[in-house]
Amino acid sequence: MLDESTALRRLAGGATRPVTQPPRRLVAHLDMDAFYASVELLRYPDLKGQPVVIGGGRRHQPTVGPDGRRRYARLRDYTGRGVVTTSTYEARALGVHSAMGVMKSAALAPDAILLPIDFDEYRRYSRLFKAAVRSVAPQVEDRGIDEIYIELTDVPGALDDGGRAIGLRLKQAVRDATGLSCSIGITPNKLLSKICSDLDKPDGLTLVGFDDIPARIWPLAAKKINGVGPKAAARLATLGIHTIGELAAADPAMLLQEFGKSFGAWMHDAAHGRDDRAVVTWSEPKSISRETTFERDLHAVRDRAELGAIFTELCEDLAGDLRRKGYATKTVGIKLRFDDFRSVTRDLTLPAHVMAAGDLRRAAGACLKRVDLSRRLRLLGVRAGSLATLEELVAPRPAEPADEPPRPAEARAERPLPLFAALSTDER
Ligand code: DCP
Ligand code: MG
Image (tube, rainbow, N blue to C red; front, side, top):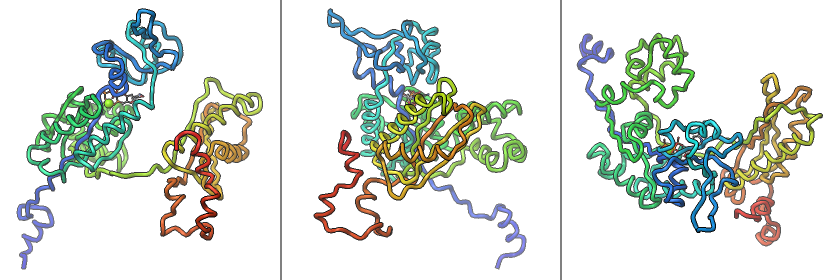
């Protein structure tokens, strides 16, 4: 039996508590280098080493002159409201960055080359690099077009050298499959790995263990923590907290008071490098939406035609998203923002799943009828919720009761599902 003082010490987490090492875990965060720009340089290798900005429309496509040489659009000739999606490191050295207006970037780098955006090509390379990674380490969480998390803990040998060998193998696999470079952070969790993949760009491999946190993580700006946005960073700055180290040293009670219980506690843990989120290898979107802010506020009656055209286009774009991703929707919603910045949403649940633009448009139109439209509008959005994959609709999961009694196979074959009619045009 335990004597009282031992029991108390154990309760208090004192010296007699068995020391358990946290389970050893390694997670990678991989982010492609200057992704869209690097994909473009594969097509136009003559541009290597030059400042190149990706952000134009089709009219900025390079042309071939009578001498057989390619001619590129230059930033200085650009007029319009487009924004920079990304740029080569040479353009960044001149001050250009993502989300900057193209005309503003032209003032900084007038001679830089402008190339149009080609999402299809970037998506193709995205699939290629992710497949290459999966062939080395299968537990991959997709975080967008150019970044992923990879659980390395179960990859044989990965833990032996802090992840260096597996990191090099991943980079080589990506290079072999795509010709592109990436930067990888490998640490015990997602939070630290996300920070670390950015520390040695381009073509970096950064390994950090818990023991390295004071030297490698604490000197960094607090906003380097994914989740500490510009607003939180500005608020921290007013409290005299600029670095992650200063955040780690801050009184947790003060953080809770200033930022609320959950965000305050999360920031305290994050600054100490604590994060136990799993690498989630599979997920379905809850909804898919499209929205647009108008160039000028529009009125439902006076600008009816223009508004109608935008509304239809949004539904067509949304239908395209659903088709590409292989989903149908049963709940269609709209979002409106008025000129006084007030927002309203309405939605409608349909008797069956749909994915065609016309069906979305009708449902969204019915939602619109339920809104008072006397004020002018700034923004319009359309959302598809209650998603089901096409596979689920064709072969419902056994647990789900069928909506209608099974029909004979021949009858099914003769009457294609409306979904397939929608799919048959281009992307089947
Ligand atoms: N992107 C975009 N608009 C932004 C930011 C990014 O369209 N405001 C696109 C273009 C990028 C891609 O997403 O190529 C990936 O974004 P990153 O932030 O990873 O930027 P890069 O990969 O271009 O550069 P880095 O080497 O810094 O990762
Ligand atoms: Mg990137």
